[in-house]
Length: 495
Image (cartoon, rainbow, N blue to C red; front, side, top):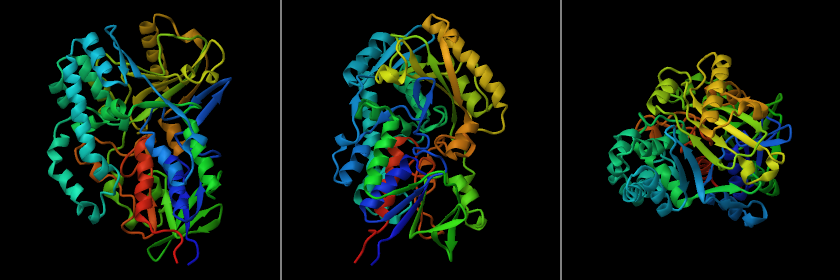
């Protein structure tokens, strides 16, 4: 039988990972990307001697990256290297409290106790519960399709279903955390993990309290050549396996004949394939690439609430701040008000929680000598037609005032250069509907089951990967979406 062909729409991290897995399975793979570069959100920006990782800046679960090299019988160290962080993140509160989130559980629990008075035993117990949620959900609900009957006929799936109440799906994160801790600062600390998939801790299920386990058990890491090196190393691996990347090639439609995906159309030409995998946001996949087939659109899924977006200022700063770390959080004094503004009022709170990533702390050539590259991000609502120019101007001023007050120095004169990413540009550059970073939100207990499947139920040969579909957004889950697809499809070469 001749070699099967697969075409992938989009060279985001999930699309690249899918290409690698299908190439290993014997497929001839083409990846068609509208931009001139690979990576999607996981790309980079260079500005006046500063280099910034444009999107995801926290690297966890590195095993899902190294697994791709191992599948291809390559030594991961020949392509990609990274180091574990002793301190995952540094936290600044408005009352002057500063907390170092140590990767080591005992050190972290001791730090919390020393800084807040919350007993270390409470932290240890909480993280043990986080581990239990992970053990129940990971291999069943994250590493397999939730839309195939055979998933639910396995004994380990049934065992996890019987333990469903243990994943705490019926309380919100905030309610669960408020019951676990007496100190409001600790509650706020753990509520923040809802933002890891663009959700609201006052609405999202406490099941998301699994996320701290990923940091404090598996750890957080820094790629020695920056986050974008994840993209670069995987593209190099894919090309070595024969994957063809076509850049500057906007896909116009998925070609469907008699209910079967037969390829894609780009630049007026058809690329014929046995499999079509879309790494484009599922909303745009249907509305743009399958616009001829409105009856095949899963309207209920496409109408779900979108995740939050982000406003990012990339600042070249003419000074080194030794009190800052690689990852830094400056908390809002009123977390509930901040989320009400994002989700109910659809605007930006005057005192937002600010995240600063400074990769030059570890990769010194990312900034000139005596300078730092600040990736400054706040969570904002998805784009629903707000006056973003006005919101951005107000947010810039409020962020600078907040950071200047806490750091004890006016930072505005230190900013040598700036570029901005907002929900509008996130949508235009990465085809993320409304600029939502993680597809749909996880603001209800059934969100995991309501995400779009990794395979179309109406169009044979059409598959979906990336953050807008199962199992969700973020680098680890995007890589898992590729794994799920590879386990669904037959080998590319059969006799």
